[in-house]
Length: 161
Image (cartoon, rainbow, N blue to C red; front, side):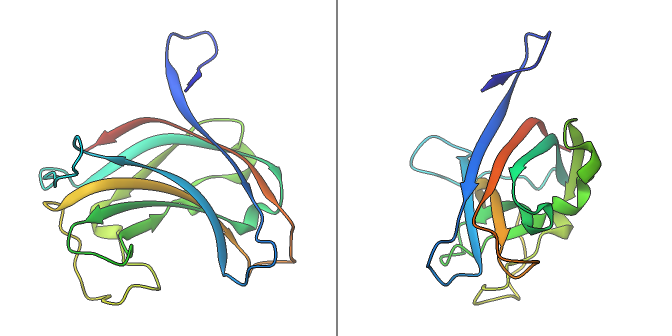
């Protein structure tokens, strides 16, 4: 946790350094997750909400910003291959404002299974959520090869609406 300047308020900071090395994968990634209950994880019912909003800022210290993918996903108990419904919120961040927090809004109806999902027809069920994750991915298919993608992602004020 990091403290806001001149405030008695804190935010979460995720520091990342992504380098693919010799492994032949499409994306390097780092992330964190929160389970919405004490262990063992049980489902929570988010059906009374239509989405989530939060503020964040990206500070990239090395690499090509076009390679950054910022993903939020929601784990459902019926999904067993980690193909949780997700949303790429990278496009909501303005690259020229990376020193300021920006508001991100994700509606649940915008969540989609990832490209590797075995069952892409599975609908998002807000009554069966047990975990939320934030992932920082490096897209190896964009631009020229870079050795590293480094920086921090700061997140604060998560609110279901």
